[in-house]
Image (cartoon, rainbow, N blue to C red; front, side, top):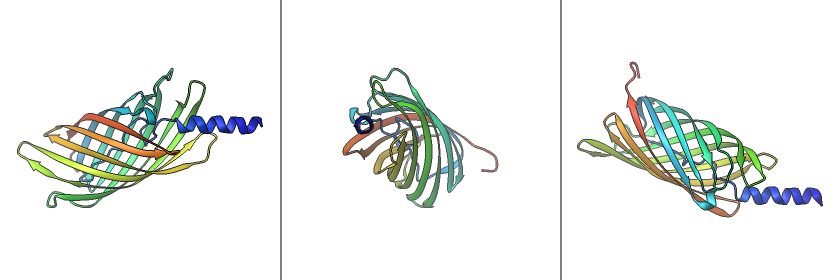
Length: 216
């Protein structure tokens, strides 16, 4: 009976757990177009109440090799009512299959993994969360004099492993846009994922700056 009670409480806490992309509290960021050079991003995430509430701040560094983009970063996430923030570390690999400078439509595949320690699930419960994300995205490059716009849609499967529970597998989608203003840029995305019968969303916004790297 005691074991059943503990399991029930754990499942109830997980059902109210924060949305877990590879960066906790953030959308699954993507740029199917890719690019070259080094890009530094600062991010802000606002999960819905069904995704844990609260807010998240993050930073990412991406190195682009035209078709291939490697990203690493972290996020600091505080669900609604949590006494402390939880930090997650993650990395992403994206490979463009179609698109580039001569084509307006871009298609890529993306895979990422991250881990977050002591994420608050309730007032009394915390858990370590390991997340793997894999899927793909499609975008359209809209050249506008002076800047560029890349709206995109990504669909990914998310595998979330909470401490003491089986791995959960769910499909989520992300609708976003990347705006280039020369070296500077802006990005925004809305991410939706259904977990344990509840659909939660995360709104993310941020800014980035790009640097050319010799040889890339």
